[in-house]
Image (tube, rainbow, N blue to C red):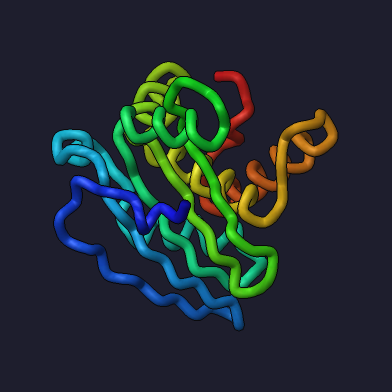
Length: 171
């Protein structure tokens, strides 16, 4: 079920931002479905989300990025992955042709907790997880050690282009 059809606590529909860059087209809608107190912390802007997705994409795409609370993150993870806890990022791709139609779901509270536990900046962790989700949308996975290595290398290379440290390096 597409994220855009799900109930949200957000009353106003967010505008769709269109980006055209070197023949790569991205239509991005950002939805905030978490309480305002969660969003008052250091938080990425829409332009940061666009930049991070765009750098990881190799396909034209229409993506909805939804920032959720722990309850919705848990519900989605249970319904689609059979896991009874909220996870940091979920990615849903609805086709394999261009433009790619997809959703990325970020759980704000999980990301905040992880960044603190891993002693990473919140922005670096958000950038990593947005890129991670965008790679999943394009068919990358980490189900095997070989695939995980490929995906981690792509994430690290992409994050370094943005000025962020290797997310897998022990601090």
